[in-house]
Length: 284
Image (cartoon, rainbow, N blue to C red; front, top):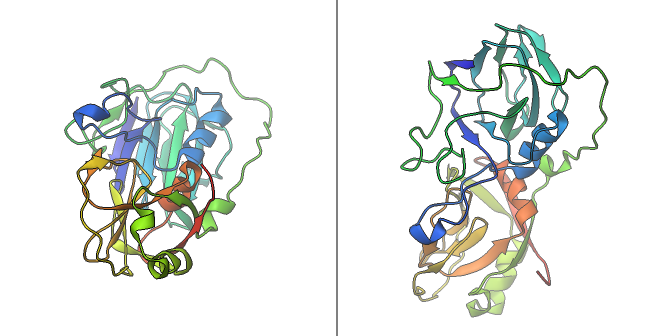
């Protein structure tokens, strides 16, 4: 077990996501930064779908009631284990009763903690991903006890080398495809959309990122239609909304762009004031 001494700002259990239930209005959910979550699992030899702890901006304080191995990836939140500084993307032995805590956010916005064998919280609709109204809890809370494997099958004695790429943490170029309603924009509107820098607004979370700069338009609303994580909607007031992992499954705003799956990770590491620009790809 892992006992939550402090939950952090917004910490949730996430895996690869919840599929095959979108027709009932259930979001996909899953890790916002799939690259970082996969890296954390890969280092430990976990399955790609093993549940991890996603931490946002401020990390939690956790006490381990059993020995295990962990890995941290994604944002650099100045992690320490029993006051000893840690580094990301490395397998770390954790003794029983050790305390993991976090400090200053140095890089990125979302960090990931994997444990040997993955977190063993309840599965709902085939996923451990937390989401309000689907799982019992939508975030971890002080006093929670998170289930993990209470033994280590393989102790890591050698230094494993896994190639990692953290450049995306600093990138502001977001690769996109044309959305279904892209061609309804004028040539001038298309040019603005694809050449202007946009700032992340204060309204950003696991459901959607709103951008500050408006794109004036007179597009008509559409019949409520399918949307996906990465869909960029344009409201009548000119607000651009980038849908994220916990987004709704349908919407009525024009869908002007669709983020490439891998560039969802770039957006996931952005926060208020950060800038992004869209780079149009020719083909899917």
